[in-house]
Image (cartoon, rainbow over all chains, first blue to last red; front, side):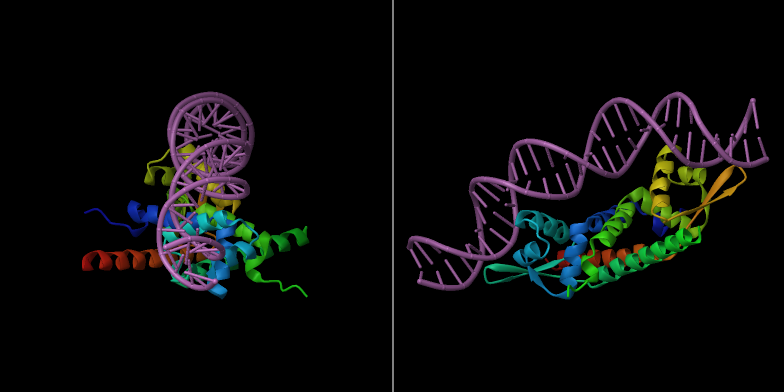
Length: 112
Length: 112
DNA sequence: TATATATATATGAATATACTCATATATATT
DNA sequence: AATATATATGAGTATATTCATATATATATA
């Protein structure tokens, strides 16, 4: 009987990789944090991050393809929002780990 | 007075990106889940994943550089372990999101 | 209906990074 | 010397990023 270890299911690991890849970009991380505060249109994000609309549009596409952002048309504009707040929990948890790493490193540097 | 929004600190965002990048690879995700179950030597991981030692070693280096794995020499061998279980929490939370996405999609497909 | 606006999509080009494997060498330990 | 691992290198392949530009589509307004 082959043990169907959760950690070794290839298919879900590939999806998992796709989610992580979506987060592996500073611009997309910033977009997600912006959307955590309020829903925004593409141009709002483009201005907030001082980045061309086509570039933001590509990043949004990556996030949309992985269902990390949702869209809703409002008149001529498309409003972006977060369909699942847990992605912010994920990001915050990583930040907590990061902050601890930085503090641990600072402590080592100080003690030398 | 400039508001120092947590979400827009570039420096930490770059570190954040590096953590996410480290997770954005199926092999590394599998390595982390293996190490969540027990500490392992490089050759153990290499066998478990049926992947050359040099490839595993490169992946471990990526994880080590970001402090996502810790090392401890035991005789001639080097034992790898997880210094911070929260990285598994991060991965599990992503899986939960993924599973909900998959189920939502299945529900839509069924209803058509 | 015609026009303007907002966004998506497509394409090309330049650049960069990452992955894999194979192979070789260096280093630490027994 | 033998073992375990790290490190380095090269090659092939693949993917991602950015920007610029152009076009397509949906909607609102005149």
